[in-house]
Length: 350
Ligand code: SF4
Image (cartoon, rainbow, N blue to C red):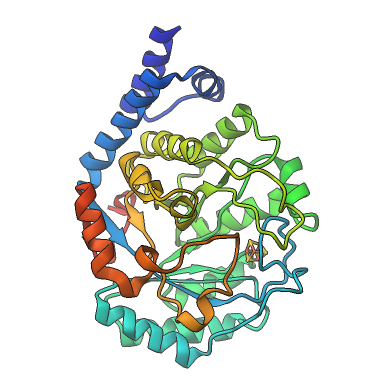
């Protein structure tokens, strides 16, 4: 059996592909030794394409209003305890200015699905950011919108768009989002690709009832979609949601998924997410060692930061905050990595 596992891992490394059945077999039968081997190959693969550089993104969480119902999320529309805020255009621009002076050349503008931010308002913000800071990339993360909406945002100058698919299991997707469907999520991802965005997808690790078959399907889904960015992180329960009593996803399972994704899509941009750093102090290092190559320090003004509470104990200060850049750089160096402040496009775009 061990021989077969090594063969499958080598196939992942050399061919960057593995069918669903083989992925299930691999996940069912990994042991410490073979897992260490797989993680090592993921580490080498990241080094072959990106070296030890870790791209830095300045994250601006500009609104926590959201019209959606995602059961796991602390700022979903039904959470009456959430203290809502919405940053003005002026606030967003001055935050970009602070980030620019710190050296950031990618801003990630992330928010809930807030109807206040119409296409017109978003395009105006994107256009102004790109005019003022001509060498930056703008990444949007605003949820599901129409193809037309994505198109005008792309034309306004936005470069990238993150939209995690969360799970490729349609029944579970419906349970997590009772008024939405996986089909419409996937349609949005295809629209983003069609529109020319560098597109990000991804899933949550450790959702209730998840099986290795589900993980294998998520991995296959991403392999076939070929996004330029993949954001995955452990599910972390939020005390104000109906999922507050479910068990969180594990660090080790998340790290394993990162490593397999690095082997399936060697040039993808793969963040060691805040959720990973939030579940374990070694989360960021373990993520990087498994092939991740992006981190997203938080630039959101401190007065709002605590209110963007997607899950409990979310890290947004210390080494997750952009103002502590020196600390972040030192932390990366201590792990053998180097912060790269350039706009850092995916090498899939070369
Ligand atoms: S996950 Fe995103 S879309 Fe869903 S409720 Fe939270 S902010 Fe809104």
